[in-house]
Length: 424
Ligand code: NIG
Ligand code: FE
Image 1 (cartoon, protein in one colour):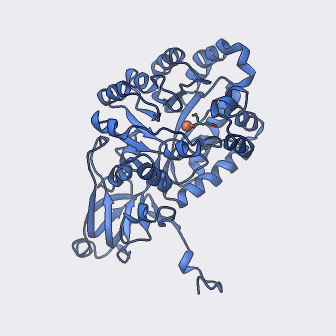
Image 2 (image 1 turned 30 degrees about the vertical axis):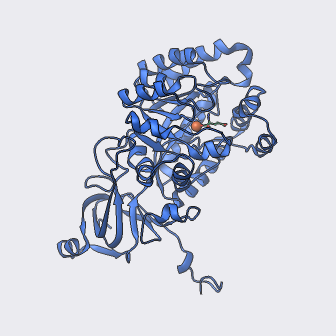
Image 3 (image 1 turned 45 degrees about the horizontal axis):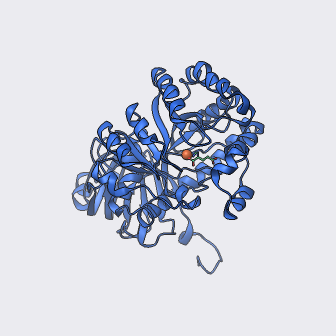
């Protein structure tokens, strides 16, 4: 199917532009009675249904009956590759234990490190595939994946290679980040300096070919701001683009450090200071907000969205999928929680989950909006208006996923041939 015309779109919703959209700036168009013409996997033209139907009469045409079409979601922060689960620790946390207490006792991230080190490549691949499938059904067509549960040379390499292998196995586009600086692993507790040396001298230089981004967790129980500066300097010199897990549980100035190093993004930012946001505004560092993680950790804080607007910091959203702080899959949930828990405007949340998310992983020129020249990664929603994404907040609204101009996923639901009373 090299030419495809999608017509009779009730609302075609997209932002547009060649830069991340600053918080507070409304950049969203809602075109009614619209159509999209797709050729060779790319968006060629958008416009009124009748105009494009006349212009492209020969193309394979799909009439979507007034439904909503939006760009595929971009999930720019996931820890998709891991083994094991942490449900017992989850119960401990519900009984009052803190995330950092568990981490410092050798649990938390370290418990996933143990399970991931013991898992074979095939097992990790199988688990990640299943997670990517669920995300696809929620409409995610591009995924960033971080390593960070190996935390030694061989196991970090194993995870990065699994991420690479995944590219051939899933419909999504994959962007890979090396997070060897997730925490100091349990077997290096009395050799902290050695772990940092291993990062600086071996892993950072050797893994550049496997990862586009470098990320570090600056936090009590992970890396200090001083260590982070030293490590980020080497990572930058080695040619990685930078990301930082910043100000998630305390304000350690992580957002400001990200800005100082010209990082593409700083992520979490529940405790970010005004000073850091001012720096991020100047450096153009995108704030990737992770409201499902904030929710799951039951943090009392939320990113100060009003200050993001004041300093024109672009906001992106992600699921932060991981087994400790965010076992979530859906960018729809991230948007809903961004609105209800963080006070984002619906337009801001939409841009954050699409165009700004794409820019936060350096893909803003290829995905994240419905514009001529971009990949035809599109979702057909089951509703006449995009507002239903938030108005019916716990429904998966994705009915079809189109990736590179091909229909890849169709939710059978009401079309299922079945004797079941729901479907007859
Ligand atoms: O993004 N904050 C650090 N890393 C993950 C959690 C990792 C874990 O607990 O396993 C996060 O929240
Ligand atoms: Fe994370």
